[in-house]
Length: 330
Image (cartoon, rainbow, N blue to C red; front, side):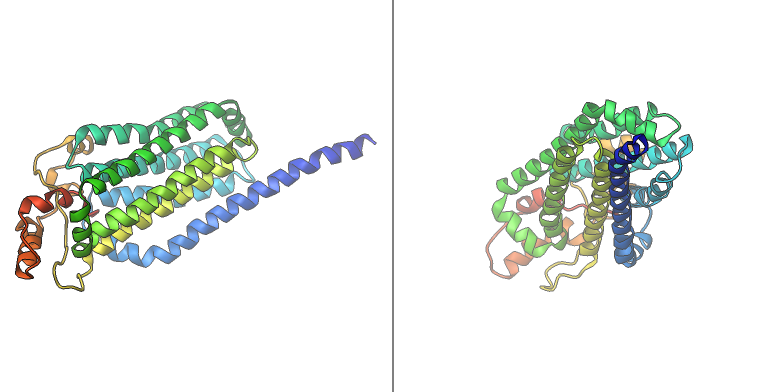
């Protein structure tokens, strides 16, 4: 009777473990499948470009997630402090890379506004900072890490909440800029492929990330699946962010079918060292938006083409706010 009772008590545990293994396996399979789908674009648009901060961000986000699949799989059947540390390193690389990418995006839209950049970056770095603390409290065995997560569920939810706040802020700031410049936004979208990708695709990706993080908090309330949900959110975040970066690079190399403009690189307005330069330790020429100037944008060719087409008059200052919306992630 006692043996049958013990078996009956173990059935829910085995069922939960089976669901967790299936969830982990599905997430990793999706990650590798997406890697196979986008690998040719990565080779074409990332590998063949010069190494820069955006390229490093792409590699950090993409390959930290892929490499993290190794300890994720091994932890299903093994335990050890080395696996936990590997998991920590790769997870922190992913979260920090996404936070810097989000901050850089808003930084470009708002003409190098340091306060906005630091605000978004700070909110984005709360999640990896809390995760460092949680990992530091974990023991040498996998189940101990889960116990720490369960006992620190409020910390984990707070980390996810900070990420949600950062996503909301990015969306609000993006659409606030669009609302202030509706007329020019429509024209720039039509004439500049990178701007269209930056605004439309970027908004869609960050909206999806916001929904994912909200779901992460909702499902994460069940302590049995909190770590599984965080794994799914991290993998989907990496997939969406890397696809967005590839979309930007692809748009920057595509010739505009209207023949009005061909974008090879996008620059920020002010060629002076910024907070980002000091953070990364890079020269302005090496930074995300400090590639060689784009002649047609620098010369205000958009306005010249508008005049030539008798579409009206415009000044170089009309398109200046939108030059900062386009960031070439090289």
